[in-house]
Image (tube, rainbow, N blue to C red; front, side, top):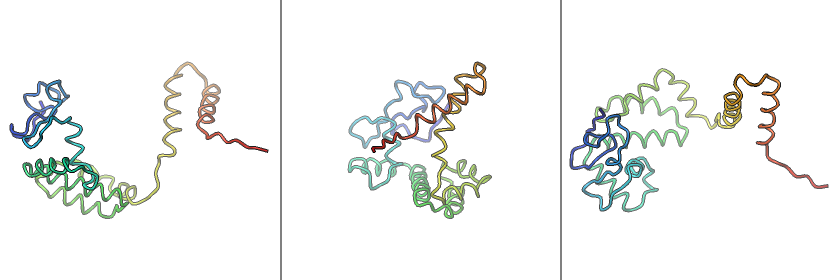
Amino acid sequence: MYTSNWSPGYGTLLGSPGSGSRSGAPSSSAKYFIADSLSRPARSFHIWSVPLSHPDHLREDDQQQLKALLARSPELTATVGHVRTFAAIMTNHDGERLRHWIADVCADKQSSLAGFAAGLLPDLDAVVFGMSTDRSSGPVEGPVNDLKALKRAVFGRAKPPLLRKRLLLIAASRRPQTVTTS
């Protein structure tokens, strides 16, 4: 059963004790989290999207709710700070700061991100390079997904020549259509 560090004054979190959920999955009674400072029930997505949003993109009432939540929970305050630093590293392609961020997160006893940070260590050079470059594997992901979907759809029913034809048809349908006028 999932346990939470939240006190009873914080309302019900998804998967918290008393929410009626043994697996941590949301139950009908765990859809709302009502803090004392909130005037209306909020969806759990909204509660977690507010601390993870860029501070400049928050509405005034969301900023007040965030201040109230962070004032009550030092663990959440530490986690939000580390997540925002990580987001800045990713956004600015500043992968060299990642080593320092991992050290800070692992040293912080109040943050719950130590497992995530430690999981980056085995492939740290690749992660730093990936966060430092503007290049992306995104353009090849579409064709790879098409190939995998086609392979699953016709597994055991088609031979390579038919697979090749269908893959070429899919690729041709994805190309932008150009119109030439004479």
